[in-house]
Image (cartoon, rainbow, N blue to C red):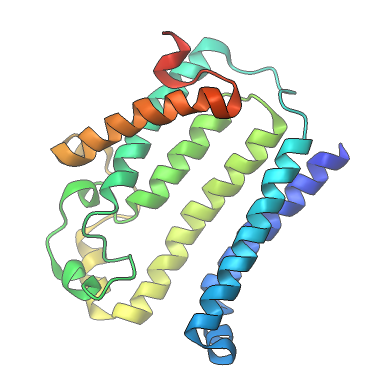
Length: 224
């Protein structure tokens, strides 16, 4: 196996693994030893360092060494990105999983917007983004990073449920009873005007941004 690919795998394992460890099993002992501020500093340094390792290892890996799925792959990827962005944007509106003093109140409220689809809209947004890149079958390096993001998002969502059960207790149990881990895609159309409007704006913008950053036309810009 190419040495650059092995390094990229190692970088992604470090990024995902350190994130899981610091967010869950090591969180309490690190906070006890470092204090809340110290923990946040160390968490940020480790996350940025491992992410930088992924970035540079990605740049060193072969850029286009898989056969690709052609136009059909681009169509599927484009279709996946829009709901991914709608979910992501909507997840910022009244999410009890976010670190907010209103978490208990939000967890007790009736789910609305993208939370009618899933209680983890941000995580599923990342998972759809990852899937959109995997279906293109563009390169080994892209597939490795996309798989890592999908694992981080979906396994992280399950672990987040466990953590929130401890933090919010009965409030989170109420939220879980009213929402679903697995997306109910039929509810996406009713996610609300604002998530859809912002999702469409970001869809156009980030698809265009793919050109100057990656040098590859993506989304609607693939055909215009």
